[in-house]
Image (cartoon, rainbow, N blue to C red; front, side):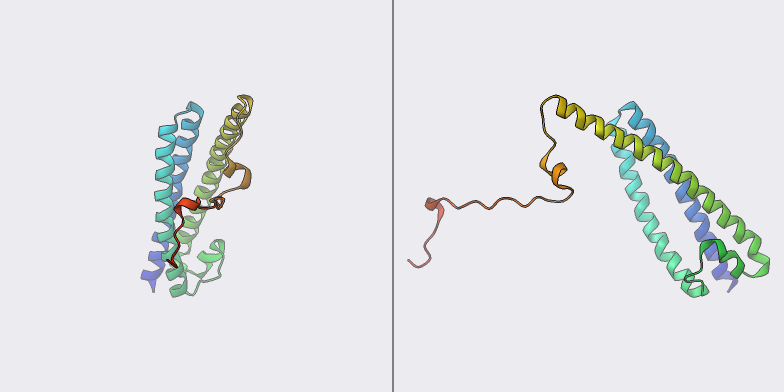
Amino acid sequence: MDELYRSYLGFLRSMSRGLESLTALNEKKQAAAQAGDLMVLNELLNQEQAQALNFRGLEMTRNKLLAQLGLAGVPLSRAPEHFPPAMREEARQAVEELKSRYQAYQKTSGRARNLLEQGLREVDGIIKQLGGTPPPAAQTGPGYDKQPESETPPAMKTDFRA
């Protein structure tokens, strides 16, 4: 059973490292957005998507471990209480580190998001000043617009009864 608890601690450390990496990516995103370097920004967004896939794998690991440990439904902050006494302090430290990394990530991601949104609003404003209108998708929301159905020209119709 101790091995399962050690695996869970390893999971918490992996999450912490992942959040640390995402925090660094968001700091770079913020710098790229401030510099107007769209190529670097695009590469950072691609790296962020790869990290998101990694987090999906970690989520699957977490769910499996929580079920095996009987900790499903237990809040992260209370998880150390369910560890063996010899491992509680280590678990508490791992949880605190993870919480700290998550708070740092939230701060940097919020700043980066605000900066990117500000840049997009500026672009929209410039387009409007130049007499343009935002693309139709921007007016109707995300997704594909339904294409208007057009009548097929009579010369292209086929009479299958012939």
